[in-house]
Amino acid sequence: MPLTIPLCAEGTDIAFGTTSFDTDLVSLRWTGITRADRRTTHLNSAVVTGSTEFRQDTYKPGCIVNFGEMEIGYFFDPDDDPPIDQPEETITVTWPKTGMTTAGTWAYTGYMNNVDPCAAELDGQLVSTARIKVAS
Image (cartoon, rainbow, N blue to C red; front, side, top):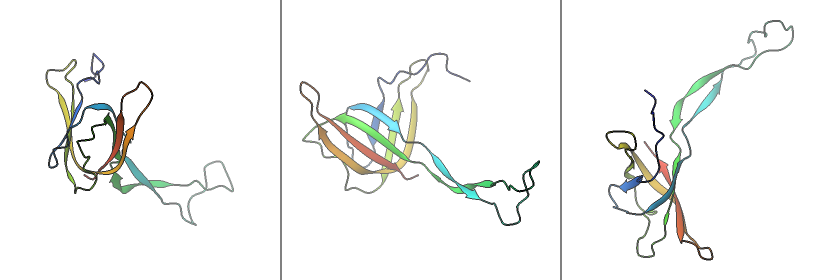
């Protein structure tokens, strides 16, 4: 059933299960889920209907799904080290309950694989970014 009210991002939170890394999110973006295309065209593939010379490439979906990465932006805190050197852990994203009776959650196993420690701008906030590989 479609939502009648679009979700508002305010209130979105991320929790790291093992390292307890805690931060104030300013942005969150999932790079997307992908699956490879397996080419099934062969030398004896059928000729395209209505053509006497061309054969059409054919494909089947691959068997392996890549769950991508979660990119987060958060307020820089020099006293809080991101878990870039830690093993996989359970990471839970909690979405606000705008228009719903309960908040939604996504939980997955992942690990931090990239951190840009701090970006500073004149009269701006100190913001860090990190990428979290969604392992499963």
